[in-house]
Image (tube, rainbow, N blue to C red; front, side, top):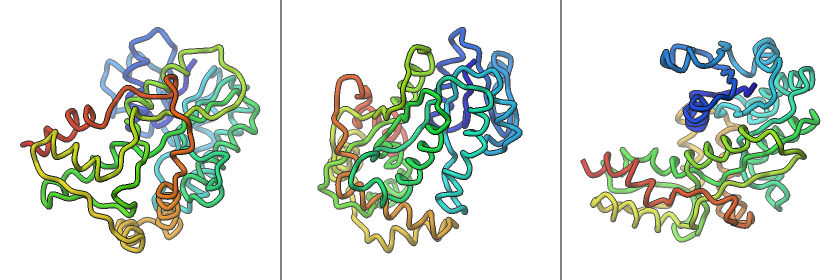
Length: 293
């Protein structure tokens, strides 16, 4: 039995789409089962509720061979509440039901100089430490920034011909697509043979700066787009204006500072940990229909 948490998230939904086509027994923990079509509901077992709720994960992890774990994005809580405290009931249920394998969606940074001062990255690593203490075989499926983070500013690109961020425009960074994260997750969840506990990076095929991204977006969509750096004070205020907690707003500042300094660039790119989706292909699929309209 494979248990999937956050099955309607960007990554979780793609994991579900792939695994429902297999013969794997699946159980989804979701707040609202009606978000799935009848074909999925008839194929899987569904437990409704939050996967941060002790009674829900206790029922959900009973008889599980593997768990796909993804904490929801932090918002009004502190980072510790959103990652570590939220995952506490899951750790208890993993122990109680002797779950063999746990796959966590997390961030790059373990073992680096930034590990303890990278905001949301630090919190996700602390979450993974809690899950590893259960003794289950564990993989931290670790990503750099998502390509989707740039695409979230599509409306601003269309309106102003710009997108914004606090990292300098010429800094080369690593990006990955959620589709490649999901593909890696499916490979691990479908393989019962792995043991031990380690990080498993998922990197995109190229390092790009935000200036590079702007050039690719412009070429693919036919609409001139440029990147504009903003201050970290402005960046933090954007989060606060959206209603996040001080902890979350500062945590994202700390995370982006660490990215600007190179936290994501420490992981070595190999054929095994490199996804197939280039940023150009991502833009052709996700941004061209919006910006070229």
